[in-house]
Image (tube, rainbow, N blue to C red; front, side, top):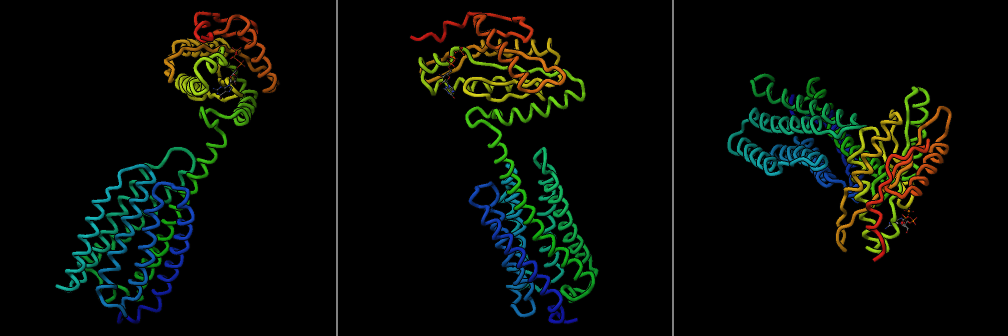
Length: 405
Ligand SMILES: Nc1nc2c(ncn2[C@@H]2O[C@H](COP(=O)(O)OP(=O)(O)OP(=O)(O)O)[C@@H](O)[C@H]2O)c(=O)[nH]1
């Protein structure tokens, strides 16, 4: 079948893919302002793709240098840029020079086997083999370095689509490279050609859509993180801390697990501000929360209740164990030196510990912890008092450190 006879069936396929690529290009351009790593490379990949398809689809009317050399070069460039976008997005090395070398070698090979020696079989091996190599690497990258947690489906789907694209192109390169198939039928309206072209035409915009989904997913998770966190310390805001603790209390009620809550308040914080400045006070708050987060076990969490007061949730923790945890935290804080512009300073924290009782609400728990905290302050600070009134420690060694100069 002559090549021109293949045009009516495959042209609409390329046209649909081109329109989809242009639409995704517009979507990626709109997302570009968010500055997510990789977006620019994916935009460039889509531009190359939008240019590649007409050149390929019009092979019957364009000179071979455009329809074979330029189009396949653009296809390989688009695939490489897609890989680079994924690598940038995932914070991995892009191997950009390696991919550039691959594209240049492929272009040189295509030029040679088009203008110097007309060897279609080798052109197919170069074009399809090159794309297969890039998509094997992309599939591995997405599978191996997908971020942990929610939203993994997008990365799995990306890895699957990349694998499918690589398999399609590898089969094509092996099939024609091994001498099977009629090379004059390369773009003819055979069932195999139409199926493989249609599949490729669906996979290409599909991969770009997944890239846009990755960007949107990251933007959403960043926005959620920012909405739930205190801007300075990165701890949960009071509102998100309360929502989380209320859900945990319900779970504890059902499971019967113990649940403890510690209210921690930095001692003489006003003096730190007065003596060392507000910035030094901020630095102490950050140092304190970083220290507590390092000390807490997986499953425990901290929220800023306001000013220099923090809530620490200890799920599935009996009171005696919670007291040991609180004491470890108190000692770590007392031993910490915070370096500020006006020299290093030490500080201390007082804590009130409350134990969740069946049927009690978070406000009951908070009230009990607050009363215990008040008792710890009354006992001289740098101390922990439990809801039942037992004081763990009342060390006043640090009390003088924050006295006004
Ligand atoms: N630097 C800084 N200071 C804050 C921040 N939030 C609240 N403060 C200050 O923290 C101080 C808290 O002072 P107080 O409530 O008197 O408590 P305190 O000095 O720690 O005394 P005790 O709690 O009784 O030991 C106030 O001066 C607030 O202005 C903040 O984000 N940064």
